[in-house]
Length: 311
Image (cartoon, rainbow, N blue to C red; front, side, top):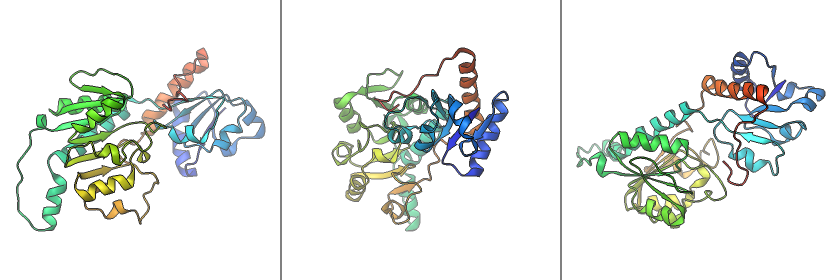
């Protein structure tokens, strides 16, 4: 018996449960709401997607949970001291999908598409000088799986790429920085800054007024990580000053983005509805199924999230 614990709609849960059941034919997978009191006492593993923490705490025999999403920050924040391991989705297809979005929107900024859109609105025919890709400096914040694959894809397309992580890393053809001093260096040489960091206590509000000021004048930002990493007021101030030329934002502190938020109406902001790297149920279910089958055979729990680091 494996519960599917989620705050999704009943219809959305049904899609996931149907797919998971197809690849886990030896398991019975039920939505948490359908579990009996006796079944709740017996579950040692659960599959989750933005679960209500109270539901997880109602499963006393739980040893681990497997998220169908790569991001588990909300779960980590809502569970004060979980007694079970939390395993996030690690999907190579997700990294490829993210790198595709990073490349697409990097080219959008690199080829001055926001400026040409403004010129069209003004009926202005004004070609701009073209900058070669190797002359455009791209900074990638976060060099985990998503950041590593995205950085390499940018390199393959001719860009000059640097990256930053909390600890030292090495990636071929990517200048890697780390630590507090490394962050300043990375920001100061990023014409386009791509944020792919996990949301942790250390990264919340990282792109604040002080750190945004290190960017070169006229730099642009792509945030495909988590909304809380950016100080919205600080970014809006830098956009108004022209220090930051444009921001492509796919994630926000509150989603959907409230109708009254300034980002919607700002001419130098592109708002996306959290679509840069959607999880695909088929791919994700196959990974979850493989890990659960291995656990049933060996008792081995897949590598879990570090509760201190938050990822």
